[in-house]
Image 1 (tube, helix red, strand yellow):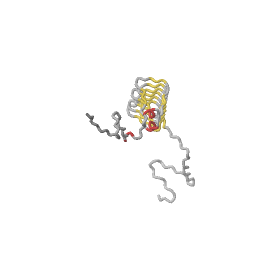
Image 2: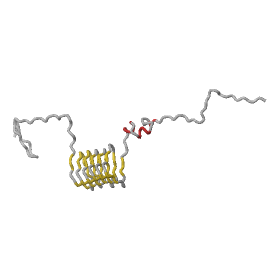
Image 3: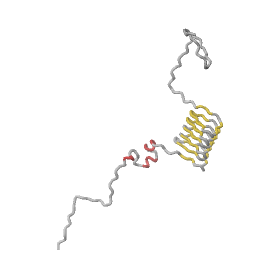
Image 4: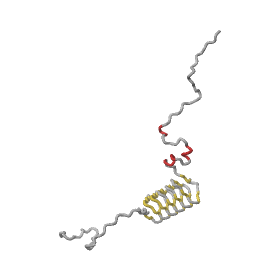
Amino acid sequence: MAEPSIPIASSVQVNMFSKPAPKPDSRLAGLPTDPLSAAVGGEASRSRPRPASLLAQNLVLEGSVQSDSEVQIDGLVRGDVRVEKLTIGETGRVEGQITVEVAEVRGRVVGGIMAKQVRLFGTASVEGDITAEQLAVEPGASFEGRSIKLQRAKSATPAAPAPSPDVSSPAKLTPPGSPPPAGPGSRP
């Protein structure tokens, strides 16, 4: 007896164990395909904001702290702090000089603060001078020291000269709230 013949399609190949290629997700456009390059400082990591570094409540650090990003201190730092933005939590304490762009203080500082912006929240306690362009002190905050206005650096281009005073007539001073003096040609 003859065996039945089974027709076989010769031009079709089937891969049973392979998956179709994934379609790119449009929400992920612009993100690095290699997560390691982003973690070690690839271009994509520079464009995204970095999370704040946290010095926890139970941490005591003796020495200076420096960073070009944000730092939150909930523990104790005995030393100078030089960062971009500093947040001192209610349990945080700094014993040293602070130099930052922005400082938000809820805890205790023993030392000076130099910043563009300083905000002392109601739970803050500062013993030292504050040198800042902007200083905000909420009710309840304690501040013992001097507040010094930080002057912006003068620009390299000279300012327009002030108009020279008219020296042909003597200056006349008028007390505040008085009408201006009558000049030549005015009627009494």
